Every structure is written in structure tokens, then in C-alpha cells.
Length: 253
Image (cartoon, rainbow, N blue to C red; front, side, top):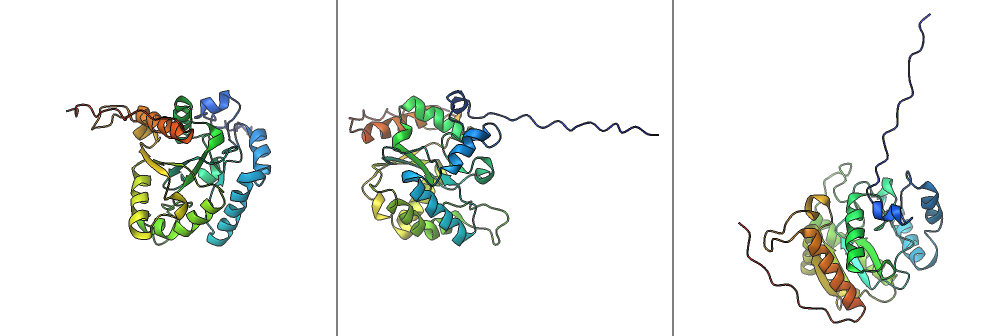
């Protein structure tokens, strides 16, 4: 008789990318902190963020796209600072389902650390995307282009902003794709009226492939530049005087 020598397959170790959020008990992760995630998932339709997330439900139903929800803990004092990426990450739906600095991925971790260093409070900040669905989804045929999707998504962005109440005073575009998407929106479709009076800043992307590199023009680390942009946005949102931008140094060769 042959004995069954099969052994249980070891599960892969759960990686904590966002250690700051975990240390503070704020992490959004179905795998690592399922109780906290379930608590806020059940309350995603409550309060001010709930208006936005009920709209996300309708958008998911009408577009059949996997669109993540707004962080139900964010912008308790109003979305005075709006942080915009160009599109959600590929794993936004499967990871936490929220667009949040508390999500367990490297981009959110870098953004949370930068915001913390900058003094940009979670209670006045909201994270979102210029295009709320994953543009580069390989299952979508034909393939989609950023410029076309930005124009197509403009009415959705206007609906989102309508639900915020007071328009944001500050908009921070995170990364070159968001800056490109913004320029396309201005040129081809025009900004939603809610954004026409906001101060718009452009910051490096918090992606690790960008975050730790040096900016070729200034020689400064992109992560430090991100902190500076967020700090200035936070200061302006509080009505403080913002110091002049640091002069550009010698171009490194």
C-alpha cells in the first residue's frame, strides 16, 4: 500500500507594503487586516463619502467596469486637497477596493509617507482618478488610449465633483500620466467648472520606479519633490503663505 505523502501547500507570505498604515492601525487590506477592512467596507455608503460611493455603484453598473470606492475615512472636514492619478491600478479592485493612502501597495505607502512628512491631513484630502476605470485593462477590446478615455470620462469627473459640495482649493496631479491627462482634458474638452479656480500642482508619481530616482533637471530625489508639492498644497489649503519654490540647481551630467 502506497502512503499518501502529500503535504499541505504553504501559503505565500503576506507582504505589508504600507507599514506606516499598519503601525497606526489604519491599513486597508482584506488579507492582512480583514476585520478592519470588513468594518469600513460595510460603512462605505455612510456619510459624505457614502454619496460618492453610491455614485460609484451606479457607475459600476452602467459601465461594467471595476471601479474602486472612495476611502470612507477621508476628507471628514471637506476635500480641500484633491490628489489625482490618471487611472486606478490594475489590482485596485482585488487589493482593498478603496482609493486610499491606507491601501496595502507600494504606491499608497509612498504617498502616505510623503503626505505625513508634508503635514497634509487625511481629514482634508481625497484621492481619485481623472479616469475612474482601468484604461489599460488587457481584457478590453479594442485597446484604449489615455487621451480618448480622459475626454470620455469628463462627464463622470463632473458628476464626482458635484457630489463633493465645495470644490477643492488644491489639485495635485501625481505623475507624468496624470499631467498628460490633465493637459488633454484642458485642450480637448475643457475643465469641469469646479476645478477652474483650484491651484493645480504637478508632482512626481509615488510609484517606486519613480519615487527614489533623481530628477534630471534639479538633481533632487523625486520623493523629496513630492513631499514639497504636498506641503505647499497643504499650506495653501490652510490659508498660509507658501515660501518661494527652490531654485533649480545645476543640471547633473
